Image 1 (spheres, rainbow, N blue to C red):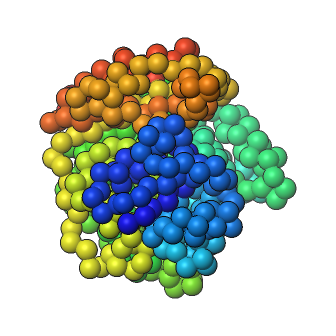
Image 2 (image 1 turned 180 degrees about the horizontal axis):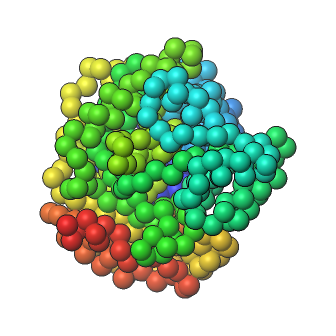
Image 3 (image 1 turned 90 degrees about the horizontal axis):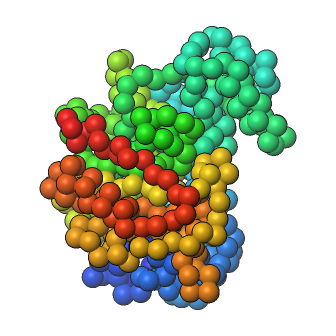
Length: 420
């Protein structure tokens, strides 16, 4: 099988790594990829947002499957162009990707499908925002309606800060909208559910860490680390999410004439009033993908192809390692407010040589043969082990081998879960 993966980050590197271990895969290509992906796949300098160019590349290469990783190309309709070229594509259409592209649309679908979620108020003016904040009271939750690379949400007890975030979102585009929600208490869980438009197939739950500093302090980021499994998660959680969230949502999307094909990322809060959806995404989450795929034992290519071609219902249950996985993100100086690029990176090869460690590139480039930083989240260091404590030890041993001037990382990824 020949496969083209679209994207540049650690999520795409994780996908390429898993696909490279699949004996059914004979050729791997990436557009545009990154230096880490380039060690496993042939890179092509094609704009991932250019649907016709991606489709032309897939046709020229004669690939059997295109896997679109990031949200922006999906919302831009890249999957539509690939499908129109007659090539199987893992990733929803532009219309179906509105589940991530518009928070207001996602809430509308959830309401129609009877999915439990936080009560929302859609606002187009600051007066409407202020009224919604007063209605719900603190803790305040304000979300940019559109894509914001994981940083469009503010959760705060400071009403002025909530209003300021809403103002910046509304000013960003003409006709801008924000969604103000009731605050959901309880721990959060990420669950990826594959869909072929009709049937669904769950992966294993993970938990990520959005705040930039230890103890969940500081601003939201795209994610500073993740782990799996979740020893504290209630029994039957996955089945409950399938019955109450995933299947009703997929059925509602099909009813609307926009079947959802790809992976539905279900962000959950285990609240005092039961499981509720925090958000939907239309793609694999980053950094949760890094730990979930590290535990997957079923070859990945056939699973993604089955989702893309309507064959999920015929697949047997997925097989998973009992081992734990932890990923720690190494971020650049100034991330998330003002990330610095162009700093040299050393020690990646040394980290990769450690037992039970692999390093995934997120924001890197090669300049005159020197690996340098090229984004806010630069590397994702994955450790595996018999339990979370062992996986943590492996991941942080890998982080210690890496040098990136001014970089920072959280030291408490999976710590509480490892300590029980």
